[in-house]
Image (cartoon, rainbow, N blue to C red; front, top):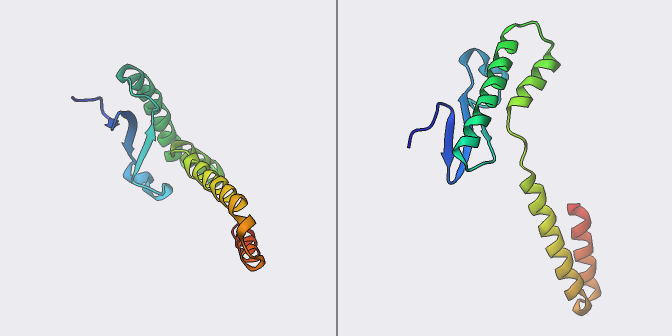
Length: 126
């Protein structure tokens, strides 16, 4: 199935993907901008695609004016990039919870030395 330009489907999710114009590559950390549209419905994806197209083309036009301060240019570039993954933070907190549960259950049978080593290891990784 063919989708509109800049609309791609990965697994069951739709994404907006656009190549950074060559004259603006020096401002971006990557060659492509790829953002999830957070939907698996084609009609919703097409609507969101129009918004992404409008936003990115306006940003590219603003960046080309060469009248913006460096800080403002960075804000515009950052607004086009996908948000950092919150999943990594969530996974880390889940692992932390698992470790805490394990140590609280097992430490009753540990020697003083084992307790000390584990307490020290936890403090160095916080």
